[in-house]
Image (cartoon, rainbow, N blue to C red; front, side, top):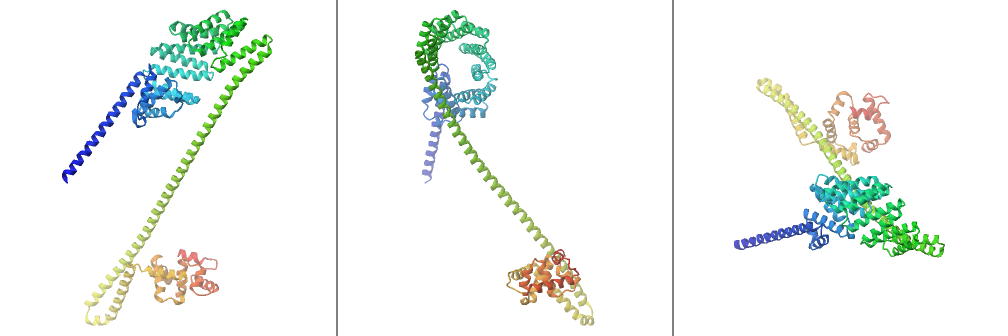
Length: 564
């Protein structure tokens, strides 16, 4: 049997070792994959996303691995321009973990991507807060590229709200960060953004200076060069330098590889041709923009064609072009309205869910506070009751001890007296025999009284009083012992109440009994039942007792009895 137990124990230990080895291997493999993803994220984001999706069980990741996975997946989705980035549940995992662990670098990156998610949801204030938090976390680090991107997106938010001067400062800050990171392409983005903001403020000189500076640096990047040329063309058009504007727009179209941007440049070129009166070229530019995927570009092209035909007197054609332009804008408005309705519905559902959760939380808190208050209240009542009962029994015990002590002292005196009498002469003994008998009887009475006190003799009195209250016993049927029980009980509880009445007033037994019943709270109705008489007789007995106690008619018998 011992050998079987040892064999079973060895198998269990071996199984536990295998499980630990497997978990360690899986954790090591996960770390290797995440490091590979981090290494290829900037240059090959599609490969990084493919590697992340090869992880078999992302939900099994824990701690830093889970946070790294959430941050890298959000980063990969953003760099691959996927709509999945609109969910904030993934990046929130990374934000909470890095914030808790105090990793400023990764926490700053997580807040940056959290801001991008909020921006996609049109929650601009939340996005701004996230960007500012990311900036404060990363300002002590050397990750200048991410710092530059943060200030760039802060500039976008300010620019979208018309705060162009603030956005210019933000873009300048981003350019300084990109220069420290030696990221030339991002520097060009900063110059272009500043040029656009200056152009929006009608500071054409500053806008042109940054555009020219961007052209000097962007000779190898055709797309950026086309963007700067287009901006210079807009500046020239505003300053009515139409030949230069035409030259800039034409060069921009030649260098541009993106069809959407080319349509925009063509639309701008058509406007300049229209201004200088070259209607054929302008019409060709506008017609080429009709098929643009950007609805605003195609709608603008139809609108410019409508204006040209209206000026030429071709009102039917102008009306048709205007209808097409308005229909395209109506599609945009309907899409925006539908998006607003969906956003309102989502907001309403989210607010409703938040309100329901808040209501449930408040109800739970109320129940918790109620039960806590009830527990404290019951506990307090229990403590008060405990101390009251303890005080009552302590007082009773002290009183009993005092009575027993007094009686023992008297017994000792009587015993000494007996001893003295016994030692006297035979003649004195005979003479004192009767006295000895009396003293012995007194001793027996006192011993009995002590025994009665020790055995809680008040039980009989309480029983008799309860019988009287319930109407099961009347005064005329009471025995002398029952009356004496009541008197002894009141003497014990109320500091010799009956004894003091006997000593100070000349009262009958019935009057003493009436005073005792009033002392324990008997009402007139109960007294009428106990004395087996009418209310009139009770009234007379009360008046007689008041007279014997020396009270006037206006004095309260109950008050005197209670206070006595």
